[in-house]
Length: 336
Image (tube, rainbow, N blue to C red):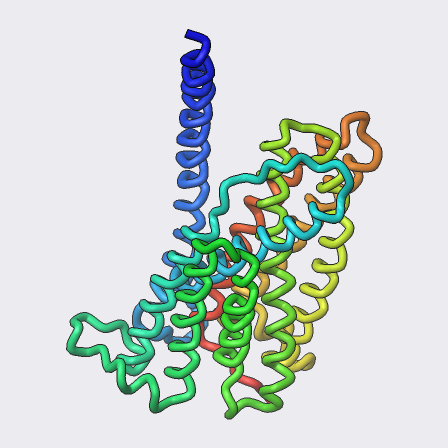
């Protein structure tokens, strides 16, 4: 009888875990679904009255890019936070179940879909016959799309292996591919633009994915002292990441819209309007981060900072969705 008791106790303990896990999954879907509406419904609102025309399937492409950005953020955030946790004394050995296998698989699907659009001449294919896989090798944009597909495939394989840290290399390749895609050789100083985008995307991914995984670890550790220490260490690094995201974002915006035309293009172009929406969201995220930092320092229980931090995660998810929309909209005219 004594040998059966541990199994019975384990079963009793696993029941609430499964139920709470299912509840969290439902809550996550409830948050993700409205976020998906931003790139799907955003183009019509952003383009209204501008006189600009969007390419067919802009909403779907924006959604795919948002999925791709999220799929990049989650595994990078996990690796980042695990590295932070290793440097803290006395942290519990338990780690949350990795979401990297699922998110990198979602990134692979999104990259494949985006590659099919490129192969069809930047049009949404309506039949398999319109997809020219071989044609991807003949253009720079096609090669970049293939690089993203292969990089997410490699990241998914690494996420399912024992060497999960190896994901960092294919994920870095995704960042490089996105930076090259966003800045074709026909634009002025494409290497500078690619460098700004690389730093911006890397810091944004670490910030977003890192906060999500930090909160997951705090929840697993049941509000122990190690959770407060991890949140404090993440907050210090996040301040640097926010500064880098802001600086590179401003630099990229000024390259798209020179200072003399910024105010006009922010209100008269779809790109400018969406950029304003993103700036407002990032400002809200910064205020939530400041609130969390104040509570972390001054509250009797430092882990009360996790309340604004959860709201910050939701706002960052909206930023990811708006970023996907931003990459799908027509670029503003660079007036001289």
